[in-house]
Length: 287
Image (cartoon, rainbow, N blue to C red):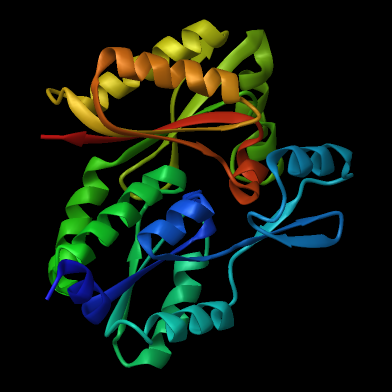
């Protein structure tokens, strides 16, 4: 019996669209993705429907900030039903419960499946979540049982870290996720604000930098702190309308560390609703 045969028998892997996993990668790795939704000027789109350019153009022209919504319980039930056609159980990994009700909806859906669905709070988002999803797929292919995989994922969750560098705090302020005074401070003197997701899965400030160059150097300093003594690791660099700056960041990472894997990705509409234009990096140290 091959590891892939074991993985089909033991568990499938499900996540949500805030992981920002490209559709082709999800298909390649056998990851089922349940989309959140974004509503702009009374029109609702599933996450991933709009390109970044289309989303930002609509957001700029809308009178109010778009709103986001978690998947319905029914959407999870439908995906779990399909997943269980080829697996005995499911590990379902989701955006931090401190940032979204997605994991709560998944748990409600899971009650219909007699203990076959195991919902895992990543306490992260974007590729801070995606690296955990990738590790769940690896655990399945290696033939781990669900309890073994969940133990491994708890350790991975502690190691994977995410930093986002915002051009502005305005979207977070308008969405009620940060105070007006903090937003004002971030807009002064060309300050770039960096946030991470703390151990509980909530946004936490890392620092402020004046101008792009200082912001990039601050990202490298943060990466170095997360890497500790490790010289090798996996990295994911994402952006919203900042492809050139993201590539610059990726080049700098390759020059400073031994990169075993580096993923470039675009942040989806749901994430961008709250961050605006942004660069992000997710770090998974090895060794």
